[in-house]
Structures are given as structure tokens and as C-alpha cells.
Image (tube, rainbow, N blue to C red):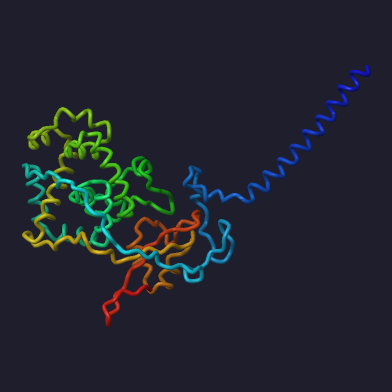
Length: 337
């Protein structure tokens, strides 16, 4: 019985010790969680976003910090000298004026105003977009694939028309606050990475690369045997939607190369963008940025098409917003508002 009593007392002591340990661990966990970033701050690391949360107040605490106007927070444009990367020695895209390409060439030239409008919409972003292509060793002409895909619309899935899975695969963020597929520069970075990957997989064959762009990675094996110097024959064997895309792309690229001959305003690829980037705190309203920097809400919407609401996402500590540069009429020098 004495032995049993000792065992019982030993178990009681052990239970008390375990209870104390659990109490201490619980206290540590509580302290640890209060010092961790908010759940929404972990969005980019895989945690689900609080997509339906109400818009944050400008005065109360949200996500662990006080929301202020950009001026109050000391927000300043991110200064940088715009320099296009030196192009790698990449041959131009092999444009071939097949029957299909000539068909779309004729269509575009029958209503050049529509194509000119597309070029005009793209002009603010083209230098940076081309810079992304060049940085991946891709020919400049591939920029016109975006025109063939979307006529450079700022609506829907954006210039490159990424589906959701591919967009997220190449690092584009999509939720109820932001859709980076709609951002010309960010989506071009993703497009350049995807096109470079496909080009390697297609054995540096550009037509097969674009077939894979339109039909998915696995289509390289399916259409590999069709490649060859006879582009007319190659195009005839492609699915209709792919043949259409290739025809539209090559037609737009050809017109851009000979813009002056067709009465199209020459596309400028080597000029600095007419905007700068401002880093603001998460949850900042666009109308406050507009007031602080002498611009309009409409202009900010135009320069930041990825933003789905008139505010930057509230779950990040900071967000980059484009603001316009203005020209000083008397001196001709740029000033920041």
C-alpha cells in the first residue's frame, strides 16, 4: 500500500507540474500572438484575405497603425531616373505576311483610328513595359501581343488577358481590392517571365512559343511536329482562335514598324513615363492622395487600373501608387505635386 501511495502522490505532482507548464505556455502564446503581424498582413504568405472586411477608418487604429494622409505621414515620390535597360542582342520577331496576317492588316488599316486609340491608351506605360521585355531577353515586338489580346483595354483581365491561375502562378495579386492583371507594367513583367519560359521550352521557336501562350504549356508537344519554315502551312493547322491571335499580333507589329507610312503616330518607346511612384500606407484613400498632390481622383484611377476600389489595399503596411508629373509652364521643368 505504501508503494501505491507513493505512486499516487507522484502522479498528482506530475499532473500539477503539467498544469503549470500548460499555464505558462498559454501565457507565452497570448503574448506572442499580440506581437505578431495582423492576419491580413500575412496575405502574401498564403493566408486567406479578409476580402469582405469594411473599408478602414482614417482615424481609428487599423492593422496595427494609425492611418494618415500621405502628407501627414511624410509620403514622398520615390525618386529615380528613368533608364531603359540596355537591350540584349535579340533578333526581331520573325513577322511573316501570310494570307492570315494580310487579312488582319487590311482590317486594321481600314479603321486606323481604332488602332491609334489603342496606341494612345498604352503610351504612358510602353517604356516600362518594353523594359520588362528587354530585361528577359525578349524582342520589343512582343509588346504588340497585348494589343492583339485586348486592344490595350484597361477593363476585365487587362492588356495580356491572363486567366486567374496563370496570373497567380507568375506572381500577380488578385482579390477584391486589387487585380494586378489590369496593371500594364506588373502584368507585363508576368507576361515576360511566362513568354521567356515558353520560348525555352519550345526550343527557341517563336511561332510555337505563341501557340503555347494561347493554348497552355502542354500544347508545345502537341504542335511541335507542325513547326517549320512554311508559316502559311503551319497557321492553317492551328486552332482558329490561335491562328486569329497570331494574325492579329503580326499585323499590329508590322503596322507599328511602319507607322509613319500608314499615318499612325509613331510609338515612342524610349521616353520617360509621365508619372512617379508614391509609397503610401495601407488603406489610404485615393481622394486624399489626389488632394495632397494636386491631381484628381479620375487621374489616379487611370494611372492605377489595378485598384478596384478608391483606396489602396488595407492589409499591407504600404502600397505603391502612381501619381502624375506636371510641367511648369514658365520654365518647362517638372515639378512634383
